[in-house]
View 1 (cartoon, chains in turn purple, brown):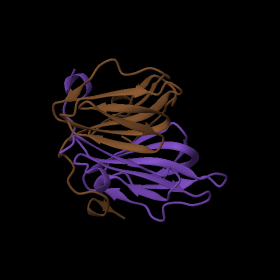
View 2: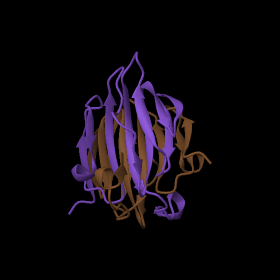
View 3: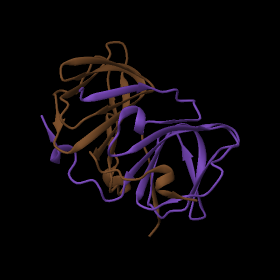
View 4: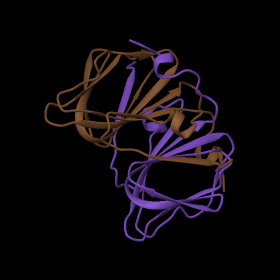
Length: 117
Length: 117
């Protein structure tokens, strides 16, 4: 069995979930686009998972625990499991982003501590 | 303490590591650019960590276990810890990508199984 798997995604699709497509075991990663003026329709939080969002293009804002946090391309945000979150696209542009779900506290060593050349 | 942290990155910088900047506990995430004609200077593999790469812009290729895998914007690739990997930009363009390191096998429930609205 090969040590890699690969998939091509449409960065403008509403949502592409990679866990099953790539056979991920340490994360769920999704690529998402919310149209201008739109939003995720509900607030949510997590039981165990830390979420990391990266803005690929466009702009918008997060509401986290009732606070408004502006978002633009190149921004990366971590939200703790218990943070109550909801994302909005701006009125002027769609927002495309990566969402990474990982179990909070699961990472041990990384980069130089985990890699071998 | 707030349930979120945020940082703005330059998507064309050589490398921006987010673990310490965001206080990540379940992943290391880095944003990387290799210039046209360039490559990571060595092959590496990991002891425990699955890596997930997402191509933001440009093109190039991975060598994984000696096999050449072409890469373009929108491609996402999982590499198992033991996969021997090296990334190259194409001769014509730089390649910018996200690299996610997570402990293989660490994810339990996710999305509907972990979230509460």
